[in-house]
Image (cartoon, rainbow, N blue to C red; front, side, top):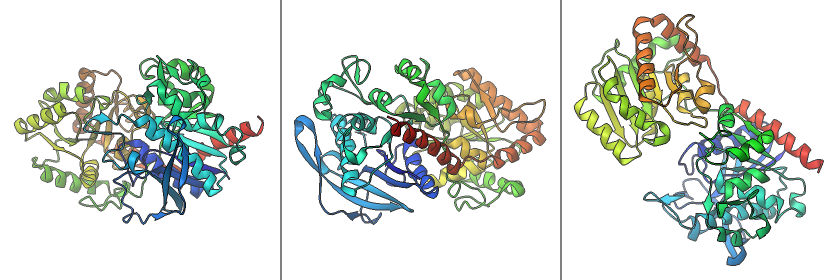
Length: 488
C-alpha cells in the first residue's frame, strides 16, 4: 500500500464550486478503505469554519520560499474526513477571502501567487509531518505546479526520493494562464520557461507544465480522455496531450450512494427501490405540487439541475424551450448562472406556468426531490468531463436525456426501440433541433411504450458507479508510477 499526498483547491464538504470538490471528498476515503495512507491538503478559505469542522491548529508555522517575494509563512489546521486526515493551509492574505478563485465574476489578480504558495506549502507540510509520499496526487491547474516542483526544487530531496506525480484533469477549459513574471515566484529556473514546458504565447500555463512533468495524467472519464486530444475539447493543449497520450488515462468518477439512493433518501416523499418502483409516483406527485404544476401521471415530467452556463448547454435549452412546451410535457429546472439565462427562464415560467417552472439558485434537498420526482432528466452539455447528475438519475430510475459527450456518453446506454434495451436517450449534435427531437422521442417512449420505459428504469437503477472501483483503477496507476520511479 502507498503513501498518497492528495492536494486539491476544493474538497467537499469544506469548499466547493464543482466536481473537483466531489472527487477530492470521496476518492481519498475510498483509497483509505483499500489500505493506503492518504493525506489530503487544501487551503483554509474564509468560509471553512474551524469550529464547525473541529479543526485544530498544528504547532509551528510553515516557511514557504516564494522566490523573489522571499519567505512567507503559513499556519496549518488539521481535521478529519472520516478516517482521512485533512490539512488546511492558513494564510489570511491569500485565502481569507469570500471566494475561492474569484469574486463578483472577476478572478483574483494574484491567483498565480496564491496557488504557487499553496503548492509549495503542500510540499513543506509533507516534510513537517515526516510523511514520505510514494505519489503526489495533484488536481487541476491550481496544483499542477506540484509535478513541476517534484522534478525541480525537490528532485534531490531525500523526503521525496521515490515520489512520483499524478495529475488529474477535471476540466480542460481552466488551465492557469499567467504573466511570465510568476516564474520568479515559482523559482524553478527560467530554463523551464520554454515552449515544451511552461511557456505558452509569452506567458505561463500551469496545466501545460503539469502535463509535461507528471508521471501519469488522468481525467474523469474514458471518453473525455479521448476528447481532450481533439481541437474541439483540448482548449489549445490537444497537441501536447496527443504527445503524452501514453501516460493519459480516463477513470470514471464514482458517486456516493449513501447520499444518492432513493431507498434511504430523507428528502423525498416516499422511499423506493428497484422492487418498489411504483412508489416513485408519490415523489412525482409531490414535486408537481411543490412547483405548482398540475398533478398528472400521464404527462412526463422532465427535470434539470445544474449551472445555467454555456458548458451545460443552456443556449440549446433556451432555443428549444418554446418548441418543447408545445408538447405534452412538464419541465422543472433548478440552477443559477448566467444572468440572461436566469431572466429568460423566469420569464418563460411566468408565461408557461402550467408546464414550466424554475427555481433560480441551488438547494440540495430540492435537487434530491427533482431526481426522484422526474420521469426524465435533461443534460444537454456541450462538454462534460464526467457528470454526476446523470448517474444520480440512473439510481433514481429517472431516465437521462443527454448529449453524447464525455462521461455522459460513458454512463448512459442509448435506448434501442427494436429491443427495448438501454437506460436513457442520447443525441450527438450540439443543436436545438437534436435536443428537441430527442426529448420528443423520450416523450413518445413514455406515452406509447410504457413497458420499455419501465424496463429501462429498472435497468438504470441496477447500474452502479461506485468509488471502490475507481479507487482500484487509481491504485493500479499508482503502482505504475512507483515502479517507474524505482527504475529511474
